[in-house]
Image 1 (cartoon, one colour):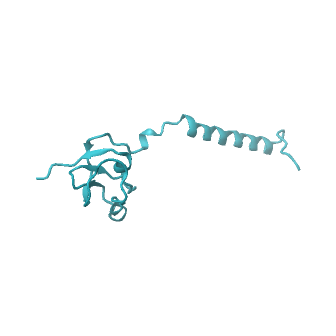
Image 2 (cartoon, rainbow, N blue to C red):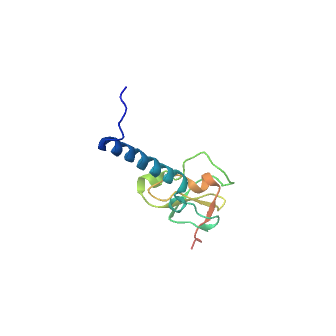
Image 3 (cartoon, rainbow, N blue to C red):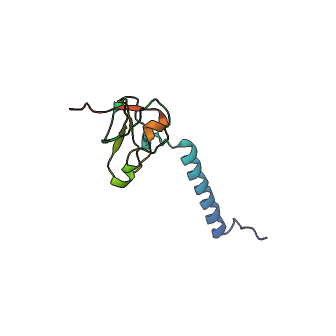
Length: 113
C-alpha cells in the first residue's frame, strides 16, 4: 500500500485539509454555543399563534396524539389548548412537533374575549 508523501505539495494539501476538517468538527462539537438557535420557551410564557383545541385535558408530560400536526400543513404557528384550560406551545415553524407538551412546559393562552 502506498502512503502519501507529505513532502510533496499534494501531500501537504491533504494534511492541511484533514487538519482543517478536524478543527471544524471539534469546534462545532465542543466549543460552539448553539443554545440560541433552539426554541425553548419558558414556563408560563405567552402562547404564540392560533389555538388547536383538543378534547382531552393536559396533566403534564407527553401525551399520545400528535396535536401540532396541522401546523405542518397550514404553515401557521399554533399552540395546543386543552379542555382544562392549559396550553402548550407547538414547535416554531417550520417545525410542527408538540414541543411544550413533550417538554412539560405550558404557555399562557390569550384571554377569550
